[in-house]
Length: 158
Image 1: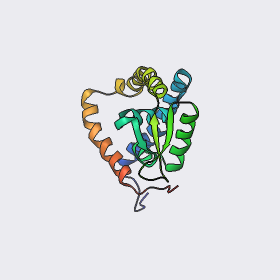
Image 2 (image 1 turned 90 degrees about the horizontal axis):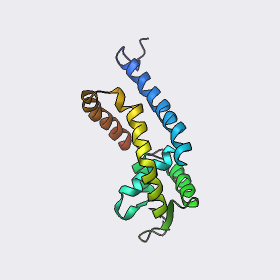
Image 3 (image 1 turned 30 degrees about the horizontal axis):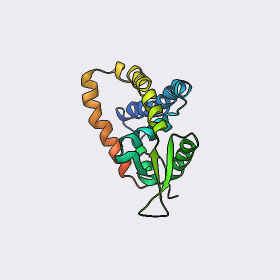
Image 4 (image 1 turned 120 degrees about the horizontal axis):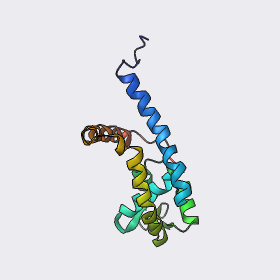
């Protein structure tokens, strides 16, 4: 190819595999998860983030950063979860312009019910295909990639 940014023979298959995983894995998980739990994978990620936060509460902007979603996307997800009674939206006491998302008891119950199936799918889709050494080696690599994405400037200022 010869272009200055062309991928070399090691990079190209790595990149293609990574792209396949980032598109196919969420879809494969969602195909089973949504009908079984009534939750989209994105909903599940938001509920997990809130369950791990102090007092099960996060500012909407912090929730967006934690989940890797844009501000506009997290707002839509939180609004939907609020309509379903799984999350509450509260005005931020420190900044009246901002809102917090709070996990409700119903949200925690739904998350706890979905957890075993999610772990089983994660194991069947990913971990059952890797050795312990693969996981030890790939874990830090994936963490570096995730950190680089987290450090990237936001693309949505809503």
